[in-house]
Image (cartoon, rainbow, N blue to C red; front, top):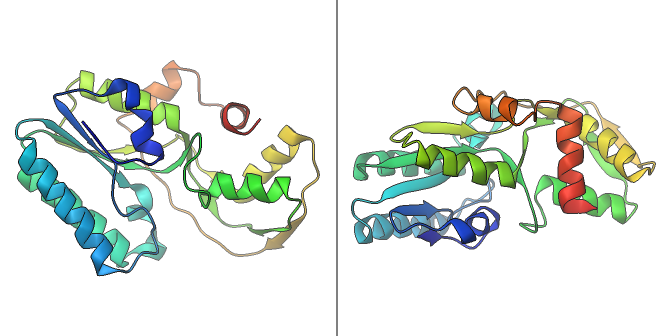
Length: 226
């Protein structure tokens, strides 16, 4: 059973299973403050759990929880509350904290969608030189999730993110090389980032030879933005 219609939910269209609830519907905007939106997700989670007793409940949370600039924000507090709710209510669950997913379509304001759109429109891009982001191919999220389910690696919180962060300027340099196009950048000495530990899934990237940062991002660009 798939709950949601966004980028992550769409990944599992051909992998739906009767014994698993894939919950990928809820508040996705980290700047959200409306109580009605938080309550909508909470009620949907409660209803879905009640209607699917005994099933494995997979909840897609966010690595933004580790972002010190968002500590105490309504969004992060809500996500932590939902995680605890699921842990308390489900006998079989898996909470996957996902970083910046990159895939086909998705919200136009997602980082990579925004950057590529700006490049194609020849717009000046403001670059916070100290900012870093963790980008992960949506297809890897799918493969990792299915593997965790098959291995019955349940009742825990797992970070689903790439093994390395990218500096924003590094992302743009790779984009510049990929399109062979000089970008108009406005460099701003500010920004921040946060590290994400991935002990549960690090072997996936090693086994599949996905540990070369530049190669990994070029593969993403070729797959979704050629």
